[in-house]
Image (cartoon, rainbow, N blue to C red; front, side, top):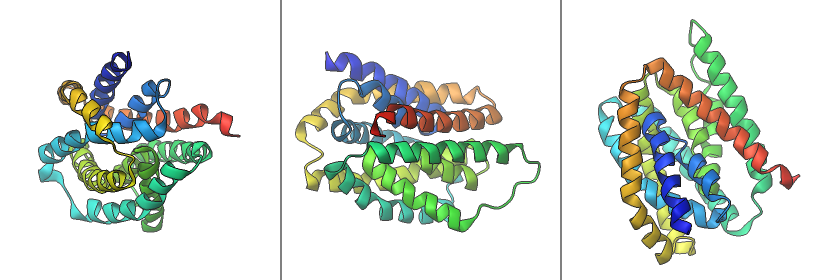
Length: 243
């Protein structure tokens, strides 16, 4: 019965990932939230998604920029540990609720930036705050919406967006797999489930990548902003009970 939910959840999640470069965790977590809790969903999605980040990074390697991904990776790792600690020990609903509003705000700001004729350079202080908050969010829920908001400010094409986002996810995922294993969050049962779901991840990912090729660059950017907004709204609505 559980796999009847997991398989369509994985296909849908990685169809979106192939098109936009992120939001797979949002889709997967939303569909799985009725049958599992965060401490089960996060490590499973982490292992299933690891190869997808490697694929997107390699595919867009020519558009990687150390100026973009190196500082972001450092900020994310800085925020990861407190996020993982809260996942293991805390009630995370209020945090999700607050981060939901932050993500909606950033999506609106990105939308307004796209409509400006002259793009202003991103504020480095704001980028640093987004980076650390991204690490907390990834450590807690594996949600990369804030990472996408950061990379969206510092890249100018969908290939650069997906490549730089992918390598940061890859570094963050490697770190989180190690810490999840040490803390007992990642178990053999979860690894077995992930192995069975990998073919369905690949199916959704490559279908999404193929769809993205036939879509205009501006449309992909609009889809990224829309998925950010939906991520935030989903976090707000699903955690209203925390108030």
